[in-house]
Image (cartoon, rainbow over all chains, first blue to last red):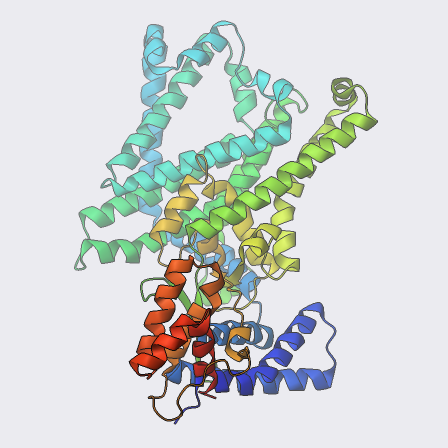
Length: 326
Length: 254
């Protein structure tokens, strides 16, 4: 027969208290070797007490107390090997680029839609400049009619760090929306891609029409290639989700989504650090005249080439490439 | 008392016992966040006042700075905002001052303490979770996931567990010397559930309404006393009689 609850507590409590004291000192890092041994012994006893409490006194405060105490000691004793860096590294070395290549068709389709949108917007505005009133937001048109780029004010009003973080959140929003709207059977992603393309194309065409083309190019050159690539990749992930919903194969739609959705999420998550990086470029380098145009353009080309080189080549040749790729 | 519905973090230890820790829900998280927010806010207010005391022409001072220094300052502000969370969580064993006050702690999904990398990831993702405003994404994620994790937690592989402050003194507290004598052997043994019930009544009795205190005490004596009607009447007539009787009853279980 199990001992009664008060007797159990009275008998075992001194051990628990010394375990608590040892744990506090362990956290402070002032344990000696023999105390470490005592800690180990006391933890095992407390674990046995927890098993006892689970059986005979479930749901009591003693049970909860022992849960908590053992969890503290468990955390102190069994610290797992810290391999998250390795996992993260492996993801960016192999997993992410491979996933992207596996879904190359979707990314290509997404790029096609985006380019189609750009061409539509540009052609409409170039052929009929009044179309800009329909396609370009009014505040942008105000800027452009004053022969100004809206980005000119960017640095003088707010400090560049704030600009970078603002841009990062904005790009993040666009990326997330592009991906997540794939849940509407992919139609949402198609719309977002076309819409963003038309927007970009019409603004660019209006700038060219008003003689601001060089300035716009100057602003976009450094960050454009990578940023637009990321949006296209997110679009590819969104299309993949939509395709899964339309054609789940032999699985129920929910299960198919969980299974293949994971791959799509990988694509979006993999883009995150590059998105942060490019926001820094967009906030610090792109606006203003700190850097001459050719520097920005070559930087943009180099970043774009590096990004796609990495995506298309990293972790390429199966198991052999595990060590040197990256 | 944790109901089966309230989520918990279950860890199987090599000692073949399973730990189950209660997971902190959205209320605890919000409360802790508000405390931290208030701390950071008061830090900035204080910093501002000190700054204005030292520098008379604030606007002129900032305009006099070069672009690089200004950039560095903005980066510094960002760092202090972000570093606060990670530094606290790493140094205070998964807690920030707000979390410590509320009694919650960040742990990895396997119950081990949070490391620098996890903490950095979950705090960097605050940007995403706070999107578009007042942590809408984070709150939604907390409400929808089984273990109440926001996106940052999901990506970092962490979650928040609740720390209950449990006072074991109530089990070992001794009664006032022999106010009431429970009849030996006349009653059935108390189960641990009964003991817990009586002790939680005794622990809360001082803060109960007098009427409720008497009513609950009477019902407990009727249930666990094993007394006849007359003994019970004399016991309940004495002030605090029921409570000292119950205390002695639990003591007799030793």
